[in-house]
Image (cartoon, rainbow, N blue to C red; front, side, top):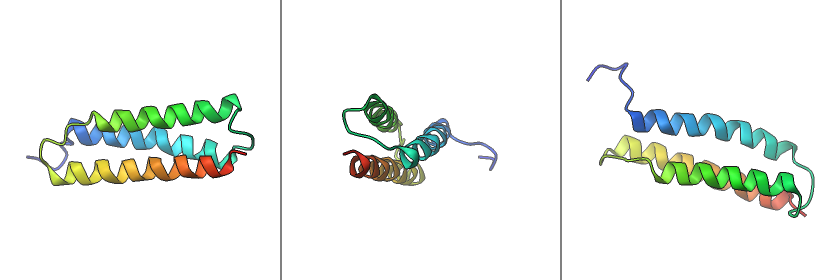
Length: 87
């Protein structure tokens, strides 16, 4: 395959990571309680991205599996950060 061909699964992961980057920014700026709407909206959106990653077909490719795993870890870390900030 040509190097400029990006598998759809990788594109999907990149797309998720772009959204997650924005959400991470929101988490960084979050100040409030776990009962706040902003809190559960962030949590919901991050969880949605996790589910999105779950639906990515790795097609038995290690590179895809690796990329997906890293993305999942990143989201989980952000969720943890959010949890620590929520009072």
